[in-house]
Image: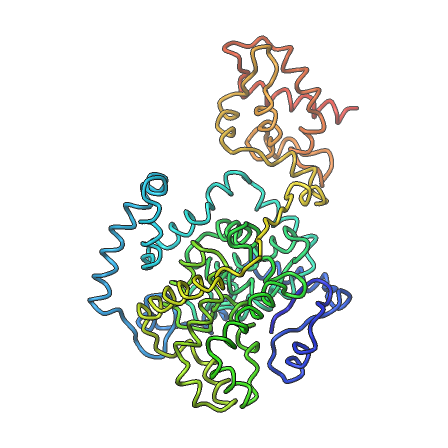
Length: 500
């Protein structure tokens, strides 16, 4: 089931018929049916904050010897062969060198990096490589503290907590990281999706995001996954915003283009589907919205994700074309029920992964020669989201503006509040001093804030002019004021405010 959290999408008659046939493709609902119960939402937050209970852990126990190399719990043992391990070790050496000299390789031998991605990234280095390919670290450096503020804002304003919780509960439960209810990774998945629901006000949350984010979380941290998701959604190359936005316009675009290709270059298969009454969109919609997650073997999925990170979403429809061509002979022999079952269980079917990707590259060359790849006349625009204007809508934004600061200044405040040449506190020091309640400036027993709801940071911010005036009156050496003096200044102003 795929859920959009905004107003009901305008679906084609064909899509509506698919819903009626029980294929469970889309479920759209009006906003008034998504009014969350506040008590239920608070219970959800408490459950994730508290973590798994003993009962949760006991009900999800597994044998450590029954897990494959990707972390999935299996019914039977599955291990890499010695040959595969040896091949992985060679690529690890190569990729370690690339990652340690990333900028150099991109500048001098970009084609070499491209070829290495096409051959597959070693599993143990996949997270580092994905971060480099998406420039995640740069995005995080540009948005220090923003993710934490979005999470806090989402806890009080998001309308999607209940739906996200439902989806997290059933996301990748056969993987060790998500197997235990309210585990660390389930918690991370819940909160990063909750943060995205307020970050992207047009889409909010849509099913499919949970699956994509869960795979990213297997290799990245919580905040890294959030920013990777925003990059994949909104940048010019990947641009999957249209896979989640109202009406799923990019899914429809890819499907229409793929069907035209199939009708011209695989007419026998399309005629067979028409003859048995199988609607190809049933499976292509699932492939595109889920980015092939839970649709193909995981080892093959990761190779597709490597390509996806490098080449963008445009790679998705040649993959569909290659899958159908790869299994064409088998599909031609199947009835409608057998075709449905085949696609439903295709993630358990054996693929010759190296052969598949050779065929994929060959098919891309073929489609390119016919000017069918990329899609002619389609431009991918950047989705510009002003995160600061979003945070300004947060009821706690004023407190955020006080408490959020570059952590590199924390040490300088602990040593002393630095002053500018004219004796005034610098802007950076002002920002740091506003975080007084996060540092041991006061004896918490002897001094309490004027009001229960007012933090020391809020008090300091409210009296910042008085504090700066007092600081200027001190004679300082080496352009800094002692930490203890700054503490005393704020303490005296606080006591004075109590008397007044």
